[in-house]
Amino acid sequence: DAGITQSPRHKVTETGTPVTLRCHQTENHRYMYWYRQDPGHGLRLIHYSYGVKDTDKGEVSDGYSVSRSKTEDFLLTLESATSSQTSVYFCAIRAGQGSDTQYFGPGTRLTVL
Amino acid sequence: QKEVEQNSGPLSVPEGAIASLNCTYSDRGSQSFFWYRQYSGKSPELIMFIYSNGDKEDGRFTAQLNKASQYVSLLIRDSQPSDSATYLCALRVQGGSEKLVFGKGTKLTVNP
Image 1 (cartoon, each protein chain N blue to C red):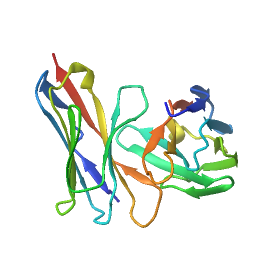
Image 2 (cartoon, each protein chain N blue to C red; image 1 turned 180 degrees about the vertical axis):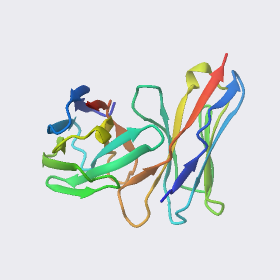
Image 3 (cartoon, chains in turn yellow, blue; image 1 turned 90 degrees about the horizontal axis):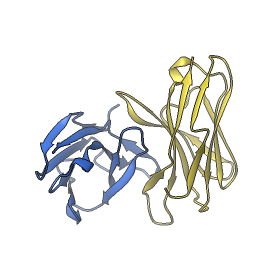
């Protein structure tokens, strides 16, 4: 599992509430990614990080923010959750130097009512 | 903008047959290509990556890359019911980006 954990694994929340998802890795990887996966859309990149405090947007970043204050943790925040953000969220890391392969965490299933 | 196209399937093959999964892409500069397997309710799992034109074999899996025709395929020999899953094709975005773009996946069912 590439030493990646995600928390919570399941969450149900209400529209308008803030939500933070956590991705934790134990192997000191520099690059970390947040994706969402929806039927009919596949995996889409939300944000990614290339180091502590270094982040950039993906293709579906609206409504999401991220933070990375430590190498091992990459947080995804929905400032005010909407029903369209109901999805499965995956965190990924990029394998070590010279490699561009990505490995995924177990995922978080988020339902916004 | 669709950059990676896969037939969504479902693709159904009998046990022991060869399953052929295909992926086409639009970015001619793409250099790195990946196949992931995803079981229902689970996270994507890397099966293979391929960087050079031609074939790359790993056990029952063979990845084939043709950059001139802009397609990459995955062959699964001696298919087993345990191979039933959704297979995702991905490529690295050109231009020094560290991002991957994924296809929507092809659902494979191997019938006993």
